[in-house]
Length: 132
Image (cartoon, rainbow, N blue to C red; front, side, top):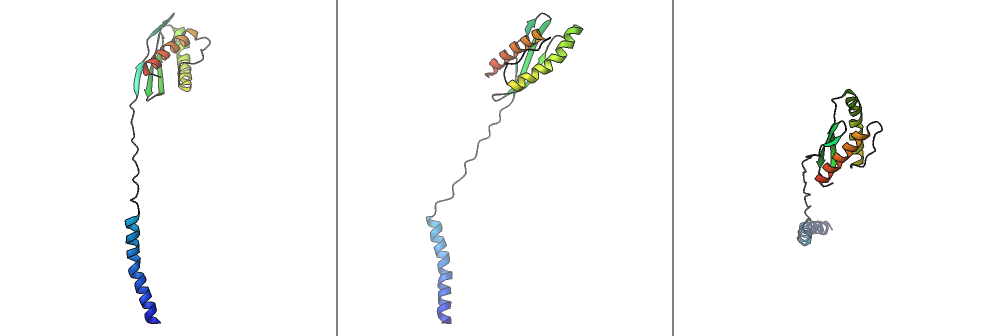
């Protein structure tokens, strides 16, 4: 009996590598994972036109990454103290509105109506130029 068990174990040990080699030969090769191409899009800066209003020009500059509006800056008249007061308060609010809306569809600010309208016009022109 000892010899029969030894012979059976020997046969099993010898057959195991053969069986694994045969299984490996018939198995399909592992699938290669496709590498995702990472496209890096550089931000573009686009300047809208200077839109004249009663107290001076308003001009918007936008930063676009791909098809996403990422930043908005604007210049507005500050020569008169009243214009400086109004525009220093209005421009940050208009900027925030534009970034949230991701468009020129923004609310006009009471007390800064002319600045708001000129801002929106310059912003829309810059967005159109950017293809947004």
